[in-house]
Image: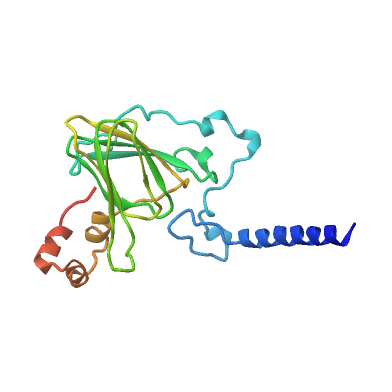
Length: 226
Ligand SMILES: *[C@@H]1O[C@H](CO)[C@@H](O)[C@H](O)[C@H]1NC(C)=O
């Protein structure tokens, strides 16, 4: 081998080693937390779910039925999300993807929430949505809102971790199908997490945070959130 070729070879080897090192990070978390235990007998599950022996895996493990059926939107917020994640479609375990059907009654809202572990890509199947997401705190202190009116066939993205919402601004039921970049995206509903936490967050904390009279905070905390 000529010295020049040897140099190229060394360069390629270094590149491979460097990219290997770059990938040698901890795996992404697949649930809110996973507290360590010393004895496996005290443990519940690993990061994700245990794997079924491939010799006994069946087509049914990759199959889910019923997304043609609308969720019941007869509730406070006028919306219902039917989730298809590794929890009810075990074949999704370790594959980093999942799905949800979103039904919103006329003037109903899939209220502001975020997914700690996934980006969402939404496709409108029926009706008209007003949808948007808010950036994290920008350098100038702003939180920028990006919104769109979405009609049948339109697609919109909610980047991972950002607060977003969809409301039905039409006169007929609206339906969307969303895909997520996690087998378990998780949901944090803003109203429920802040005013419906169990046990409740101190009234002083919320009064300061939302700059509201404590009486109003207590009123909000007395409500039931979906
Ligand atoms: C969503 O719809 C399902 C199926 O109709 C129903 O069982 C569930 O209670 C509904 N959830 C809410 C929050 O209304």
